[in-house]
Amino acid sequence: MILPINTYSDPVLSMKAKPLKGIDPSVEELIGNMFESMRNASGIGLAAPQIGSSLRLLVIDISCMDNYKGAEPMVVINPRILSIKGRNAMDEGCLSVPGVMGEVLRPSAINLHYRDEHFEEHTVEFNGMMARVLQHEIDHLDGTLFVDRMDKRDRRKVQQELEAIAEGRVTAEYPLARNAVVQEAR
Image (cartoon, rainbow, N blue to C red):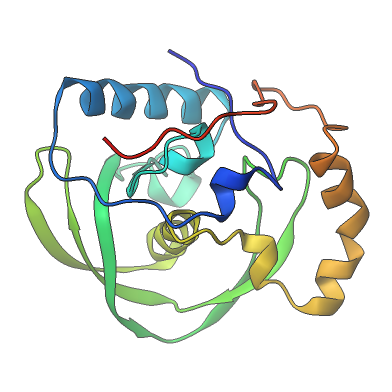
């Protein structure tokens, strides 16, 4: 099922998401819906708060990008960044901030501890685009949007667009949530 995406200024996007304690049929269904919703919106990552569920859960699929055709889709539960390396700046966008792009400086590599869709633990080092997308989505779990990480001067340049999104004066090629209600952790 394709779910609407919550947008900038929605309270769920500024909350710290709650950890998942396990996998059950409702979480499995949520994961499937998240992949379907992300792909419908032509996204490469989606965090549960973006669809109104305050859970530490995200999905990623960067295989649509030219240099990452062989990348496997990923389910990440309860992620924790253990260490970082390097820095690089890159323009980012977000399904929750439609039409806005901005430069964000992030670590170029991360060592990540997380659970997968079977709730099995992993500790893996990621770099390049996968590291960037993971950090962007983990930010959603911590109540941070990419625009919060932009340089103040650059942020001022997009302030009118952000205000328009907050007021509901935005459209997208995918469904957007209006006056969404936050779903608490299961």
